[in-house]
Amino acid sequence: MKHFDNKVAAITGAGSGMGRALAVQLAEAGCHLSLADRNATGLAETERIVRTLAPAVRVTTRVLDVADREAVHAWADETAAAHGRVNLVFNNAGVALSSTIEGMAYADLEWIVNINFWGVVHGTKAFLPHLKAAGEGHIVNTSSIFGIFAQPGMSAYNATKYAVRGFTESLRQELDMMRCGVSATCVHPGGIRTNIAQSSRIASNMVGFMVASEQQGKDDFEKFFITTAEDAARTILRGVRRNSRRVLIGRDARAADWLARTLPAAYQALVVMSARREAAKARRRAGGAGMAHDRSAKRNA
Image (cartoon, rainbow, N blue to C red):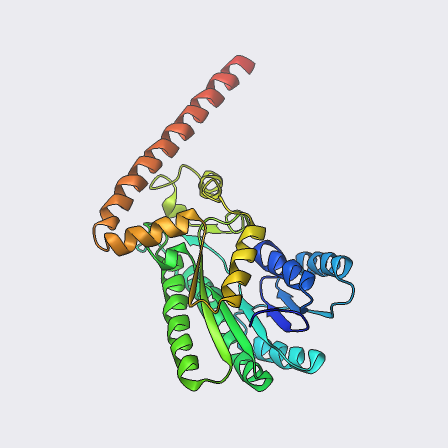
C-alpha cells in the first residue's frame, strides 16, 4: 500500500495520542476513517479536528471497549457497511499496569490482558475478512519497547506486549503464505508523549519498592517519553508504505532492540542495576519532600 488516498482506515484508541495523530495524518492523505475509543469526549474532539482539517473525508465514530469481542465485531461490520470497504486497521488502544507479580491482583491482570492483547486479537479477527474482501489491506498492531525487553514491575504489560509481537509476527507469516493482498506490521514504540502514564494503574505494592508514591511513579514514567505522537504516527505510516514487518519508534526503542539482541541474558542484570538506582533516587526525593513539608508545618504552627 503505497498511498492512503481514498482508502478506509479503522483506528482504536483514536481519542488521543498516537490514535489521534494517525487519524489526522491519514485524513490529510485523503483516507476515510472509522474511529473508536472508550473516551467519548476525546473521540468527539478527534472527529472535530479531522473534519476541520479534511472536510472531504468521510468519518464515522464508535464509543468502544476493545475488550468486548461482540462490540468490536459489530463495529467492523458497521465500518464496512458505512464506508463500503475497509483497507487498514490500527489496533492501537492500550493501557499500562505497574505491579510486582507477587502482589498483583488477578482483576488487574485480567484488565490489562483483555485490552492490550485480546483487544488486538478482536480487532484483527473482526476486520481481517473485510480487508481480504477489499483485495488490499494492512493490519497494524501496536506492541511496545516492552515487547522487546522486560522490566521489573511491568510483568503484565510485558506479557501483553510480547504476546502482541508473537501474534502479529505469526499473522504476517500466514498472510505472506496466503498471498491474499493483506499484510501486517508490528509496531514497537518507545516512550511516546501520550496520556498512558497518567491513566496507568500503579499497584500499592510498588510504593516503597520502586516508587515513592503512585503519582511520583507516573510522573517519573512520563519523563522517559521522548517522541511526539505526531512523529510516531509518521513513522508508522512510513512503515505501512514500505510493508515493514516491524517498526521501531524512537531512539530508546532502537537502543532496547540492540541491547536485547546483543545481550539477550545479560541485559536483565543491567536493567536491575538501573532500576535499583532509579528507585533509590525516587525514595530520596520523596524523603526530602517529606522533610521540607514537616519544616513548613512547624513554621506555620
